[in-house]
Structures are given as C-alpha cells and as structure tokens.
Image (cartoon, rainbow, N blue to C red):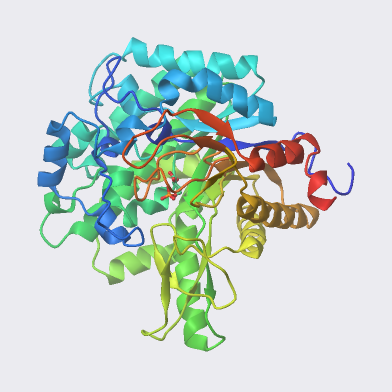
Length: 487
Ligand code: BG6
C-alpha cells in the first residue's frame, strides 16, 4: 500500500435515503410514510429544530388527508424514482465503489400490515439493484431511514407498540428474500439515537398519543422495541443471506468540555456516554448498567422480557456505522452561548467555524470519534454520512464549491490519520452526493451534493442534474484512492 493511499478495497461512495430522493410518493401502490407528513416551513428559522419537528395527531391527520405535494417536499424528493439510471450513471462516473440507500417500507408494505408485499415496489428496488450491479456499485442498504408507514404511527403510536416489531421483521424478511442476491451490507435503523430528538420521524411516536406525563417512558419503550427488532433482523439477515454483514448506525455527536473545569468535564462525559449507549446495546448485546440505573432513578420503568434480553445478547451487529457532521461543547454555565448542530443545540466551541446552519465544522473531531469508537467496540467502522449543507450559487453555469472540497479534504485527511493509527475503517459514504431534500428542514436549498439538482424549496425547476466542481475533485480522490489529497 502506498503510504498516501487509503486501504485497498476501501469503499468510497455516497449515501441517500428513499424519502429524501425518490419522490413518486403516491404511485405504484406506495403508502404514506411519516416523512410524507413533513412540511416545508418558510416562516420558521432553519435553526429552530423544535418548531420544525413539532408533531400533533391533528397535524399528522391533516397532512395525511392532504393529497398535494406543494408543502411536502419529501413527497417530491428529487425524482430519483424516475431518474435513478441517470443518477447511478453519474455516481459511477465519479467512481463510486458503493452507494448507501434505503428501502421505503411503504413501497413494500403500504400500511405496514398487509400480508403480501406490493410487487411494484419490489420491482423498483430490483431494477435499482440490478443497475448498481451492472455499474459495479456495492449497495449498503438501510432498512429504516425515517420512513415508517404513517398508518402504524396513527394506529399504534408507532414503535411504542410491541406489535410493530413483527411488522418490521416481516418487511425485512421480504427485503432479504427478494434483494439478498444483490445486497450484502445492511444497516438496521438510521441514527437509532435520534428517537429522543425527533420521536415521530424516527419511530412514529406522536407525543399527544402517549399516556399523560409518560412521553419520555414511551419513547424509551419504542427505542427498546427497535433494539429488539434490530437484533431480530440481524439474525434473519445472517440466516437468509450467506456472508451478509449487518451494522448499527448512530449519530456521532462528539462533545467536548468547554473548559477543563471538572463540572464541564463531568457533564461532557455524561453526554458522550449517552451518545454511545445506542451502539453499546447493538454491539455488546446488553444495556449498560449505568443507563439502566439512570432510567430507574428517573422513575422510567420499561417492559423488557427475558426473551428480549436473550435476543439482544444473541444477535449483535458485525460493524458500526455512523454519521458525523459536527461537534459541540458542553458547559456547566447555563448562559454559555449555544449553536445548532444536527437536530441538537450545543454549546458553541470558540475554536471552530460553523456552516450557514450553525453546524460547527470539526475534522479533528472525526478522527477522535473514529479512535474512540474503534477502541470501544473493536469491530470494523464505516462512516455512512458526512458532509456540509451549503447554499450553492450558480456562476458561469456551474457551481464553484471550494468550501465543500475544503470540508471534505480536511475530513478525509483525519480519516487517513486514524487508519494509520490502526483504526479499521472500511468505508466512507458522503451524505447527499446529489442535492436532496433536507431531513431537518425539508429545504432543497441546503445542498450537500457533488451534483446539483435544479429545484428550489417549493419544487420549481427542471430537476436537471449538473456536475459541480467538487464532482471532479471527488472523482480524483476516488481514482487515486486518496493520494490526490496530498498532491
Ligand atoms: C442525518 C440524517 O441525521 O443528517 C439524514 O440521517 C439527514 O437523513 C442528514 O439528511 C443531514 O441533515 P439535514 O437536516 O441537513 O438534512
């Protein structure tokens, strides 16, 4: 191996999610998902996640009855449903070895409760996987990326009800049976920890449907059901697809103490332990004792059977994947200045610059995260989301996105340092290699891509694709397996 290159067979690529790209929300038998309820709110500050994520039964029922897409950009996506061949060809042109994508549960089971899957939904993904195979792009498939049937949310309050475990296992089994010949890498739940930040998007939980005063408990109960489901579908992947590799996926929210005051350090330690807890359960197969004690101290009693605990222990994941966009600080000072991150509000770190959305750019934090996670779990790691949301301006008919290239270059160099220090990092998929609809704010104008999509926040535009400067830059990184970063 050349000293300046990444490991041989390193999986370079990009990541997308069905609900943010596909569109085609009401065709070929697709049912409504929780993502189809997300509205674009031009009057709300993009940094005010609480307002963007607010959910009530009344609002969800109203959205479900509204059969237009004007205020629901995730219903439109970027029309990947019809343009996937063009998009995959562009990814192949960049040299992608892999593409992470998700399967919309509602294309396969429109309400989640059907006994038989929707063949048209299956045909779509089969066509996508066949095309990827032809282009030599290895799929990494997320089974649940904020896309549960809204029907299950309204009827059962989503994952709060144990019954949803069976519905999800049935869905996963169909995916394995029908797509197993194309797909080897599977992720169970995208950012499983995000259930605490946006319970509806992640798990279909609508707070006003919870027992009074028990929202927190119900969210933990829903999380527990997702953990059990994750273990069951890990088991099933291993049984049904020979050689399959299953990973958990968490939001790496690296937190630093604002100062070395012991209180700042203590609060930071708590945050980081909490952030790692989700992977702990999926990799080690047990709940950390301190988390159980914390739940007890808070009077949160969960319904966990002996059988659940046996399942968790028996079917742990093969690798850990995570998203990494930003880091934040923590402080004991209640007046410390705060700034938004990925659906969080953290303390501002005076040493870091921020994106236009306030997310603090911290390449070194990625290396620190890699080292921490590898030391903690000792299993292969994959970075399955990373990138910078920015407003791109068309100049001379293209986008000169030097800021994006700089962001990636610094993060890639930190990945290389971690690898050189012994971390087993097997792949990297940038978030949104093609512009797509934002998960947090439903904006199109928050762009992550190497490929520009001509569409605005309200869905105006041709949806034509265009290569940005960063397209050629990333192509070179992949072609030289990282060596071009050091030229
Ligand atoms: C991750 C999600 O948390 O962050 C993606 O898995 C999301 O779905 C990404 O798009 C970036 O967040 P946003 O709000 O900028 O789209």
